Length: 309
Image (cartoon, one colour):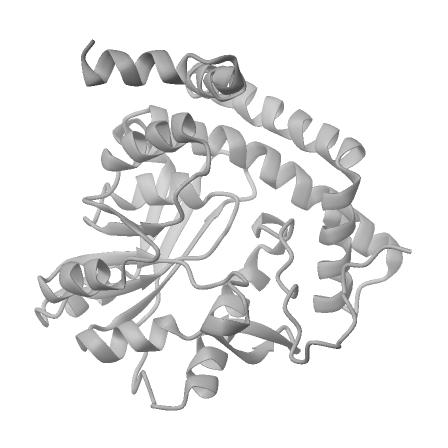
């Protein structure tokens, strides 16, 4: 039996049927008429809001912490919009993975492209600061219409979905690099490539410093400054979002960060957090607030911010 046949038979096991079903639904969803995709995504978000209570609690906690100026009703309304945006994001991810992005070109406005051209002209590659918006994977596909890039990613635990995801991203990015492969990231940047990297999640105390994010001390990864220091590459903030018409998208490069890294890990992490916060405030409903951004606390005996009574 060939290795390929053996692999297929192994992945045909019933424990992988849910993954195969999800992949099939994504492939179908990617080809639905645009308005139907948005409507279906909105419905998925509505269902998730009402059924996935743990994620609703996490989202509400994040919004309460980061937007204390909102009233209770305003906070509830924003949480509902977040679930809607992330529901649509499932169909956007399917579109990014399963369709040629060329069919989306007329829906995209790209701003600040000269900033990236200037950065690449230095011949040192570039480190792109991506952000976990609900449009993340579609944003990567749309970005490929204008610039080539590699991507740093976390491998999926399910081997069937990991294979699907890696294959899909291979059509969007030059290479998909495991987030633990620092040597691979540095090598690609030093070869003159742009690498897309998202440093806005909580990866734990061992690899982080604590720096303010929406005014809260958050575990903030040190690797961004380390990569910039090892490569000398310009660090390029990239903002992307779905516009209010639910039909079009905007991608925007900000100027490369000047005097970065500074040599102070906390100051550098705070600076990256400030850039990310600035982007989120433009469209807060499209950020992935469903994850526990403040899971790791500055002191081990600090209370869990996400504990439920």
